[in-house]
Picture (tube, rainbow, N blue to C red):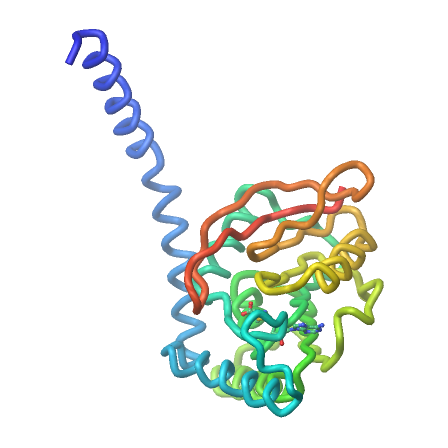
Length: 250
Ligand SMILES: C[S@@+](CC[C@H](N)C(=O)[O-])C[C@H]1O[C@@H](n2cnc3c(N)ncnc32)[C@H](O)[C@@H]1O
């Protein structure tokens, strides 16, 4: 190796060491907030793979009964893992900030078992959480999970911070969300162009300042949409790893 080349490699290594030792407190804080949300989630819900496999089976049975069993359907099921929700929420709160609103509201479009919403509410004290799910069996499962959540609140005497609203409905029939979301989650990996176009309209109709967490598919950006991308990160799902985009209505 040439002398100049070796020198620049050493400088890069030194910078790396300096940078990583400059942020021990920050990384410790990250670990603490994510660890405490993880512990709270585990104290309420089963986090073994059988819990999301159950929601997957409910979805499959419902789709087969409706003659919609094909693999590439937008109705196919997978979940974002709670730890990924905690990581994304941490990024939003520390790097992008959740825009303050009078009453902070979170939505999940295609909410399945509701667990992504529960995870979001363990990371941030949203006043309202809304889940919209097409398949009745998954909607019913989200209501059962809400019972589990409420039982835990009663057992631990925790004051209820969030009011939950689960609705069995088709995203394609919605134009505008009321109340407006502070944060909107959408696990859109298998959403087809038609369904994603509906999500885009819903997003463009949101108030300026709304934050979007989009799994795999980012909303269209640019002046005509009023949406910009703030960042992205790799996150784990029950089915593998994918990109999660953080975007904002501007
Ligand atoms: C990949 S799953 C995401 C579940 C959950 N949001 C999560 O991230 O863990 C997508 C969900 O969207 C639902 N879905 C698909 N098309 C829909 C539509 N048109 N209206 C409402 N929900 C829909 C599916 O049934 C499925 O439960």
